[in-house]
Length: 442
Image 1 (cartoon, rainbow, N blue to C red):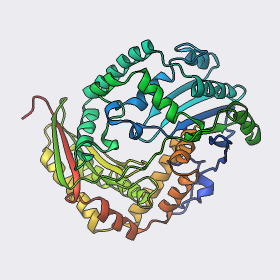
Image 2 (spheres, one colour):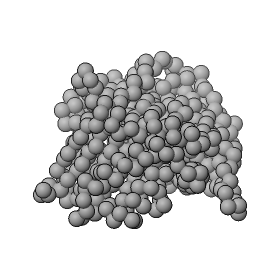
Image 3 (spheres, helix red, strand yellow):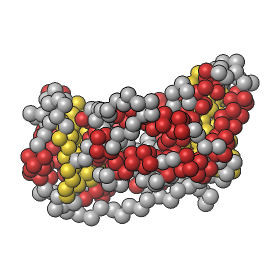
Image 4 (cartoon, rainbow, N blue to C red):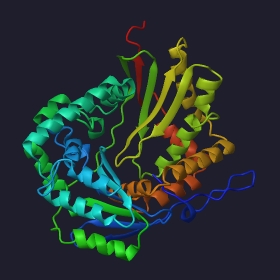
């Protein structure tokens, strides 16, 4: 998760890695008396301002019997307050010429607005209102439960989402029974959703939607001091309270090779899951380089072997989740009709093993660095993307996390990659190999 300005292009044959100060701006960060963390970043490329308000409240914080509470509450945050009716927040945002949305993950819930620079403070009023005066009308709760059930059915009907869910159920299975928090679906399931009512949502809201459990980031055409004054005017009067205790979940690693097979859709799909460290672990950026070497771009190892030269797959991808606790690295591919899926699996596992025993070339490492940097630059050009980045970084780790991550990417050498590959790419030590096969196939 790294935001940036555009890097300087080098004419030399060896790519030049820019310093972190060239790539990642640093917001000004302060804490209000009630515990709200506030980050302000002037970014004057356009007269636009984005706000991102993150609550340290995600799927990992739910009671097992009420799975899906964090996501359910995200929906209800758009359904009215004491002074505003259902849907009014969206209507006001559109009338102001802006946009808003939200998302929930296992680690946090994030809400954002993007507005013109002469009216962005309206976002502060709206966020303050629903932080303090959310109205959880039982009729609206029942209505929104139906919306979420439709959303759940949509994910269950999509082959990749269904395969990811089945793989996660196996990967995050606890030895004493049940699932690790990262194995629990963000949306919950039909049984848990039926148990969530206005009372459950209200308890979660009162315990976790408080200033000391939140980070507010403002990015765009703003003055630092004026923006802090605006935020203080709207939020500093909110009472201070201690948030519910939150412990980082323990990392769960499967033992041996576990297999999952589903019948869904009309194509063969492979998903291999391996352990990955927490996002702030020094090994995580090194693993990011390894996944790039494996499956990013046409010259990556798996793309050449499975797509271009092997003509076995339509596409291939690899990525490591960047989460508060250790999670998973996933390699995925879609098999060409008529290709030998057993050969696809063998070739993927062979290349993982090869990377564990032979370090990548310096050319591969430098290429991976440049791809990662380019992806991050293009992925954080907009003010809302930068607001997401720094709000989530501050909520989970620190405002300097992106800089530290990038520095580690810059410093990693072949020995680091070989060591990290040996630790995390060992399929036999612990992995889940999941196949989604055609419903009517052999």
